[in-house]
Image 1 (cartoon, rainbow over the protein chains, first blue to last red):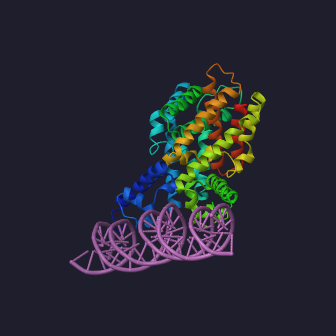
Image 2: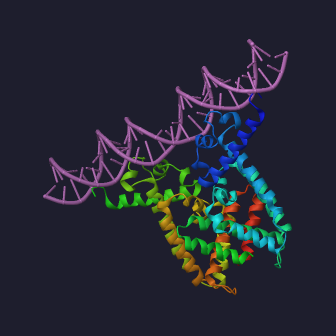
Image 3: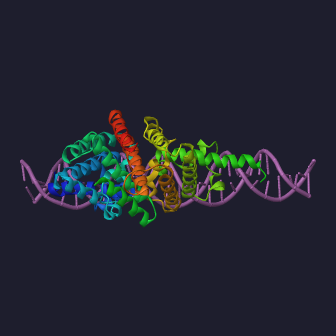
Amino acid sequence: MRYPATDTAQKHERILDESIRLFRERGFHGVSVGEIMKASGLTHGPFYNHFASKEALMAESLNRELQRTFGDFDKVPGSDIGKAAFVDYYLSEEHMRDCAGGCAVAALASEIRKEPEVQGAFTAQIKSVIQKLSSYFPWKSRRSARGDAIHWYVSMIGALILSRAVNDDEFAREILAETSKRLH
Amino acid sequence: MRYPATDTAQKHERILDESIRLFRERGFHGVSVGEIMKASGLTHGPFYNHFASKEALMAESLNRELQRTFGDFDKVPGSDIGKAAFVDYYLSEEHMRDCAGGCAVAALASEIRKEPEVQGAFTAQIKSVIQKLSSYFPWKSRRSARGDAIHWYVSMIGALILSRAVNDDEFAREILAETSKRLH
DNA sequence: CGTGTCACATGATGGACATCATGTTTGGCC
DNA sequence: GGCCAAACATGATGTCCATCATGTGACACG
C-alpha cells in the first residue's frame, strides 16, 4: 500500500459506518453510492476500490453492524432486570426517533427480503441472537424459552416499526408503552 | 367522458389493484410507473390522466387496500375462535409467501416512514383497526383491552416481517409457529 | 352524420444513478 | 532521489426513471 495503510483502512471503516447509518435512515434504495462516499469524505469514484458493488457494501455493512449490535449483548445483566432494561431501551422514544443510529433489523428487515446477497448473513445473525436471547435471559412461561424469546423479539421489532410508521406522536408512544409493559 | 365511462373507471381500478400488488411485492421504490401501467394493460403516458404523481398513487392505493382489508374484519366471529382463526391466517406459511397478496402493513410499514403524503391516511387506518380489534375480540388479561390488542397486532406484524426476511424455511416457520401459539 | 373532446399512445426531456475509464497524487522501497 | 503501484479525483457511459408534450382515434352529442 503506497498510501498510508492506516488511513485507507480508516476510510474503509468510515464508508461502512456512514453507509449503514444512511441505509437505516432511508433504506437501501433511498441512498446512492455518491451520497455514501460524500458522507465518508470522498468522491464517488474510489468506491469500487473498496467494494465490488453496492449490493456487496449492503451485505458487508449490515453484517458488521449486526455483529456489533449483538456483540454488545452481555453489557446488560442476564436477569429480569437486564431484560427489562433492554426492553426499555429498545422501545424508548429515543430509539424510535433515532432510526439512523438504532437497530438495523427494525430499520431494514422489510428490504432484506429483496436482496439475496444480504439474506444469508442476516439469517445467521438472527439465529444467533435468538439463541443468545433464549439462553441469556430468564423466561418463565410454561412454554419453551426459545419460543418465548422469539415472541419477545418479534414483538419489539413490530412495535418499533409501527411506531415509526405512524404520524401521531401520542399514538406512537402508546404503541411503544403498551408493548413495553407486556414484555417486561 | 367520450370514452365509455365504465371502461375508464375499470382502468383506474386496475391501476390501483396492480400497483398495490407490485408495491407489496417489491416496495414503493422497487416499482416504476411504467411497470404499473404495463401490468394494468396500458402504456406509461396516461398515468397522469389518472393520478397527479407516483406519490399520490401510493397514498391512494395503500389507503384503498387498507380500507378493504380492515373492512373484511367482521367476516370472522368476534370470539376466541375468530381471534385464533385470524392469527392462524395471518401467521400462516401461505401468508408469509404471498407477500404480493398479503397484508400491506407488514409489507410496506418500514417504507411509509419516508413518504409523508402516505403517512396520514396510514395512521388513521391503523388507529381504526386497533380500535376495532380491541372492541371486537375478547381480551382477558388484567391490563387494558386496547393495550392487549396493540401488543397482539405488533407481534403478528413483527413475526411476519422477520419470517419473510430470513433465508431458512425451517427457521421462518418456527418464528411463525412460536408467535402464533402465544397469540391464540 | 359530422364535430369536438377526452382518454389513449408515442416519444421527448431532464435528472439520477451504478459502474467504469482515465488521469493524478501519494509515499514506501531500491 | 527517482520509480511504481495503490488510492485517489474527475469525468464519461449507458440505463432507468418520473414527468410532460404532442399527436390520434374513439365516442357522445347535436
